[in-house]
Image (tube, rainbow, N blue to C red):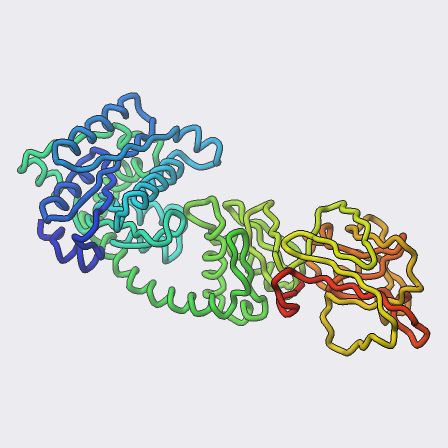
Amino acid sequence: MRLVDESLLCEICGLNKNSPILVGVSGGPDSVFLWHRLLELGFPVVIAHFDHGLRPDSRADAEWVKEQASRLNCRFILGQGDVETYAKQSGLSLEAAARQMRYHFLFEAAEANKCQAVAVGHTADDQVETVLLHLLRGSGLKGLCGMRFRMIIAEFSASIPLVRPLLGVWRRDIEVYLAQNKIAFRQDTTNRDPRFLRNRVRHELLPILDTYNPQIRRHLWQMSFSLQADYQIVDHVVQNAWQRCLGEERPDYLTFKRAEFCAEAEGVRANLIKEAAGRFSRDLYGSNFVSITRVMRFIQDGQPGQVEMEGGVQVVLDHSLIYFFPRGNWPVIPQWPLVSPGALIEIDVPGSLILNEGWILETSLAQSQEITVSGGQDPFTAYLDYATLRPPLLLRTRKPGDRFWPYGMSGPMRLSDFMVNVHLPRWVRDRWPLVFSGDSLVWVPGFRIAHPHRLTPFTREVLKLRMYRQNKSSSDHCC
């Protein structure tokens, strides 16, 4: 096969003969051909088969692949799972659930066996079907690029690539090769199951398109690789914009700086949203045009609030930052001194109190002449007139009806209004630590002390409150 030679495997797929390649083998003609071709060219392989449990005879396929591996002196690894149950529990289609379970197994096996890559037998026909599937789902440019010969899929591995050496080979050529070389394979009856959209595209839609243009498959295949080259330009622009707009990225959330985000071109903003949502989406194919447009409009309006995208992604706008995270999994940010909702803790004076995420509240007393309060001090350090306080001091979270008289203001206001005014994100307001003297709120850490408890020329004894994160400098504190 000219299209699957050593130069393609080495130069395009990035493979070498120094370490094994894990080959996903279903037993069908494509994966069996890939397996044999790699062996013919001298590449070391490990064979992996995943039993989806979708057919009564699926176990027989696994046994057949195992026997062939033994005959060819290849190591064999078997994985299995209940795809139907997983699909129901995760809200995925059977196709998406099967793909997730299969790839998780393949990459875990590759890592355990120190394999350089996972190789699968996707062909030129599969590429054409994939492009049509994405077109039917209303995909953008990225989806119309189809599959690539080599790529990293972060969902499954950050270092082991997925390679598809057969993307330039048509299925009919593979079948001819197997027949000429008398190589046996299995036929998967689910490949004709109309429950799967790909099968309907393969057996119903493509034959109809052939009547309009007998070369439609080759044209779609060529288009996909042409668009891959074009998309490299788009991706370069988007990745540069990502670096300009990104505030913070963690496993459970990421933020964009709203001002920088809004300064980007409309197409770039749309791609940034799609890329960010893809980090947390349960939907294999990402968000559609309507969803992305709605989020763009929401961010452009600039009003704090939240909106949900497909795939269970929550987008929250809090003035200067845009948050993306899985729906319902409100992020806990280590740089914020959050406590449990409803917390009520007595504060010793002097003393220290250990909070969450390594945060500590320290209290100490000093005479007024020993204290120098300068402008620009750490917002997590407060100085109060101790004589105005009524012990015991308490640390608690907000309650309905709480009021606060911020330093420098003419009178008290609702605490909820103060939190809005200082742009405290709404999902942390019920967990923000507050210092009370009796029923009087005397300090909102990170923001303001209460006006009635400020230092005055008549202050004699000063209470110093310092909240800090252990092993972190005050410059790391932010809100």
